[in-house]
Image 1 (spheres, helix red, strand yellow):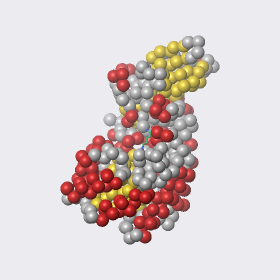
Image 2: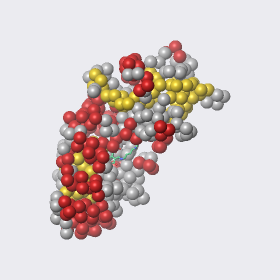
Image 3: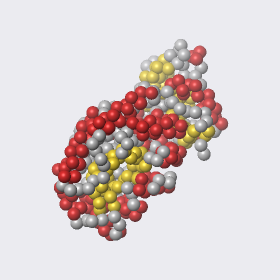
Image 4: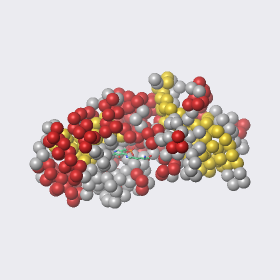
Length: 405
Ligand code: LLP
């Protein structure tokens, strides 16, 4: 079974296969995250094709660390961006070379920094003066060199949900541009620590690329200033953040990817360092669906509820960010299509925030029907927890019609 496009049409075409598969897996295992690896492969190529040629792509592993997803990323020569010692180990175990891994994150501990230095990551993206001092101390102690890039806070409004805005002056991420002389001073006495470049990440699910453009310009002007002072910088890391239209299907992504690539090419046409990008969502979001089974239909005078076997514990995005995900019935009996109603698709968790979709117009739903929650390939399973002591959903991946082992 191919699972190429998780748009409405495709899911419905393939739904019998998905449901058959889940049934043969024993219903006790439902809900299931299903990944389309062929779609992901294609998306990585699409992304690579539009970015400037001197770009090194480092997939943000936090979006989805499924082993088949990581295999697809690695097979296309893409590196990783990680934000914890755990993610760093996961990347190494998946076969990535340390020299292809960028280590970001605002709260790196001594153990995590030691691990990064000992493994020899490509660069540590530094988030504070104290972190730089800690890196200097540890590289001296271990007597090993390390590359660092300064993560700057360009103070732009990324126009996304406040919880995933990271490049505004009030956010904990990155450093004030005024800090730069302090940072450079610290490095003067620490020859093991090499300043390889500058980095930023202004937020996630960015639908407007103007803030990215503004922030890149600011970072470039700091780059030029440092170069003019004699620093030999190599990498300009522009982070991730490109978003998708969750209300629309996969096709709408391409135009946005194209715009992003053009913006980078025009802004960086005279740039002769190496560009690093850290995309997460734009690569993987579309290629995951969460398949769930309706346990009960409950109707009262005001509402129709479809109570399913998954919820905010398995997919936090709707409850945490009021995020919209398309929800599509599988194996839908078209004779019920005329009987449309508004449903709230809700989970089993003992909280009223446990809503996956509100007021969704759907044909008559029944107990034991399956639903696909779409576009959950990014920040889906990685954020799942077992609140109320439910189990975690299983994950299945497909390529070339085969279930991957
Ligand atoms: N680089 C850094 C340093 C990051 O912190 C992130 C994401 C990325 C790259 C990748 O960003 P992306 O291309 O995926 O937007 N849980 C939220 C998203 C949190 C993003 C955190 N940082 C959600 O479900 O929307």
